[in-house]
Image (tube, rainbow, N blue to C red; front, side, top):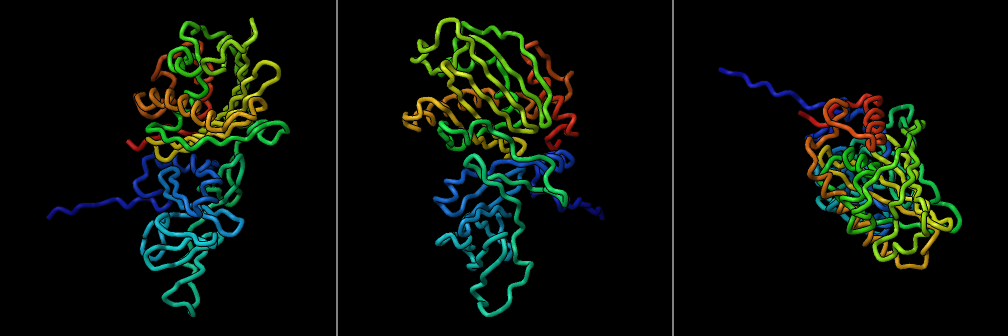
Length: 353
């Protein structure tokens, strides 16, 4: 008789984890955005998946809780439940209710009994910033190994705060962030939104290391006004784009507009899995603040779609960290530094083979 041996999954990894186990443990120590605050406040209960871990995000009074999605009693997704009067999420199966910190606060079948702690949900730390709910899956006893990424100008006087709807990409977060940092694709990918197809030149630029990654100041004649407004650029104006990479999957861009205008964009790529990304993009600007916000949503969605078209087609789907696996050109200076930084974090192949 043949005996079939089945290896048990590691208890600290999510079900059906798509990441290399060692890479997952490194990535789980970082902060990621998982929901827009406005969505949680509106609906009371929002579902999210981070690094293959299914989560429920819900409101209790003035607090927002991030916890494992499955009810501890019979494994029903709590995202199917309700949150009446923001008093915590209620399981649709047997009515168990969960409040602050994921604690079970009501078992309707036994209202007079004590509630055992094993019914509590596993919850995660929460930071509310830039209109987003941020969490860390594995902070450890000493806390997460990094802070929530910094976004310039969000709280500055005179700046309008805008939060684009989340955007899903059928691709890996590392590929998306690398594309955000890339300056050579404008003339080929963004010709329907802001770029000039006849201006593909990439002037030389340098990168500088920072405590969380690197930054680069890139000057060029490629404008950032949407098509139809390009004539607003003064003659001989050089556009400055100041990139900041916060490893592993967040980056920031400040675009310097004419007459002191600033556009601050946070690219927070949340890795749903090794093959899917949910993109959150808070924006702050000190110009056109009287214009409808929907214009910003519509324009940026077109930009996201242009980028996603390429990211979703790239092979291999993961981001090759061995510099010998793909060819490079001088315009790839940011990409090369990005990949080097991920290697220095100890990351390797990302995907489960």
